[in-house]
Image (cartoon, rainbow, N blue to C red; front, side):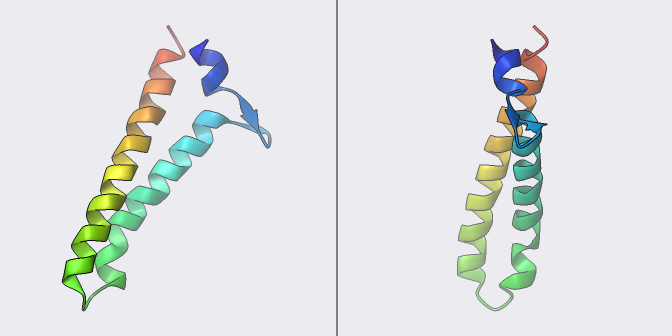
Length: 71
C-alpha cells in the first residue's frame, strides 16, 4: 500500500520525488533567509523557524515513504 502511495505518478515522476524536492527547496530557503532579510532580525528568526520546521516535516515524510515502501 505504501509503495503505491510513494510511487504514485504525477507528471511522469513519482510522488516521493516531488516531496523530496520540496524538502530540499525548503531547507535551502531556511538557510538563505538571513541573506534576504539582513536588517530585520526579528522577522528573520520567525521565518527561519517556520521554514525549518516545514522542511524537517517534509524531509521526515519523504524518508518514511522511501523506507516503508520496501516493507
